[in-house]
Length: 402
Image (cartoon, rainbow, N blue to C red; front, side):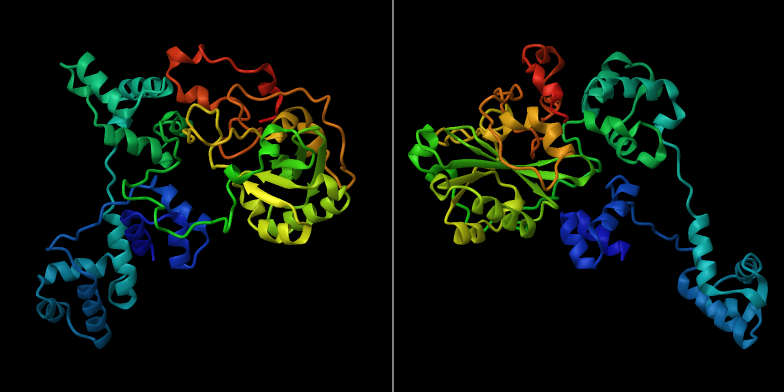
C-alpha cells in the first residue's frame, strides 16, 4: 500500500485524492508523507549476488523436506557456504522461516549515511542562521560558494538543505524554520503536485458579488447584510451579520461550522428579524454556506459570494472592475472577539454595532479567514526585511486574538 501511496504522490495526486483511492483517512496519508518530509524514498535495488525472497522460500521448502544444504544450494544456483550462513543466522534448520529471514535482511541492509549538516556543526549553524533570516536554500548555496570558495567542507547542495528541513525526524534543522521558506509548506511537494482538474469542495450556483444591487454597494438602503464565520478557541464559532447601512450587528452562536448546521441557524436568526430588513446577504467563499440555495428558498434572501481573495492584501490581484469586498464583520470581529467567541452561548443575540470603531488590519483583511492575517504577521514575512518597516500595522490588529 505504501508503494501505491508514493507512486501517486510522485505522480502529483493530492492527499485527499490519495486517501480516497487507498480508503484511508487523509491524516494517515499525511503521517506517512511527513515521516519522510514528503520526499519519496529511493527505490531499493537488491544486488545480484544477494539472496532473493524466492531463494529464501526455496531454502525454507528444502529444509522442510529434509534436504541437505548442499542439495538446496545446487537447486537455487548458490554456493553451499552462502546457504549455510543464511540458515545459521536465522535460527537454524528448525526455526528458519523465509519471511522472517527476508525482513531481517532488509533491516540489516539499511545503512543511512549522515548528511553533510550532521557531520559539520559549523556549516549546520551557518545554514540555520541564514534560514532564520529568510534566505532560500539556493541563496545559501550561492553564498557559500562565494564566501568559502576554497573550503570544500563548506559546500552543500540546496537539495540536501531541503531534505534536512522537511525531514524533521533527523533533528538537524529546527522544524520551525520551514515557515521561513517562501511556500511555508510542512512537507516537500513535487512540481507535478497540483489540484487542477481534481475534485475539490465546490460551491454550486454561487452568485458573484458583481451582481449585488447598487443600493447594497452604495449603502443607501437597509436590509443588505454582510456575514462571516468567526472561529475561536476550543472549537467554538459564531456567525456575524452586519447591516451595511446601519451597522447593526446580529451574532448567531453555532455548534459547528458545517453547512448543515449553519443554514438552519441562520434561518432561525432571520425568522426573528423584520422581513423588511432582509434583502441580500454577502458572504465569502467559505464552505459553511455551501447550501446557500436552501437558505434563499427558505427565507427569500438573495445570497452573493465574494471573490476568493480580498481587495486590499498585497498578495491579492483582484479584477479592476470587482467591487471592493470589505466585510463589515471585520470591523466588528477585532473588538468583539472575546465576547463573541470565548463567551458564545445560546443567549447571544443582536446588538448595536454603531459604536464599534472601524478596526481592521493594515490591509483590510477579515479577522479570521483564509489569509490568516488576523495577527498581522504573514504579510510581514512575505516582504523583504528592508521593506517591513514601510508598512504600518494598526494597533488594534495585535488585540484581535489571532
